[in-house]
Image (cartoon, rainbow, N blue to C red; front, side, top):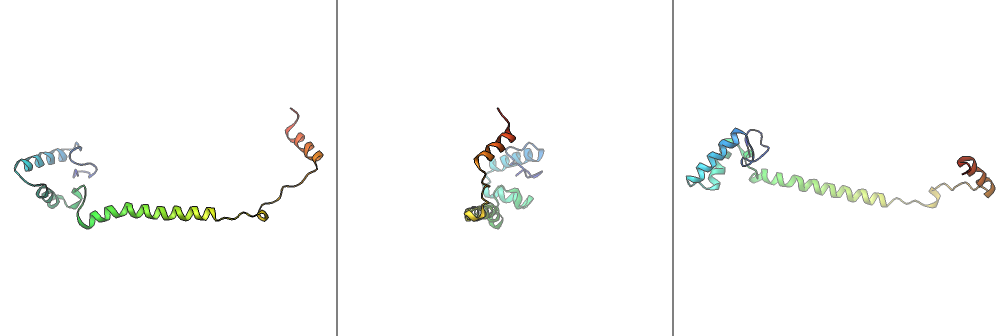
Length: 116
C-alpha cells in the first residue's frame, strides 16, 4: 500500500512516496531479491499495514469481519421474514364493514362522488 494514505497500492497511486517505492521495488527485483524479502523489508520499515493482504492474525481478522457481518445479516433477515409470516390475521381481528341497504349506499356514493 502507498504509505502516505493507505488508500491504494503503489502500482496505481500517484504520490511521490508510491513513485519512490516503485523505484525501490524495481531495484530490489533487479538485485535478485525475492518477493518475501521485499515484503519483509517494507513490513520492517512501515509495519503490517503496508501489506495489502496482511499475514497472521491480522489477515484472519480482515477475512473474518465480512464473513461475520454476512452471517449476522442472514440470521437477522431469516428472523425478520419468519416473524412477518407468523402473524395470524383471523377474521375476528378485522372489523367488519358496516352494512348499508342498497338505496342508502347509492345515495351515499352519489353525495360523495357526485353525478358524472
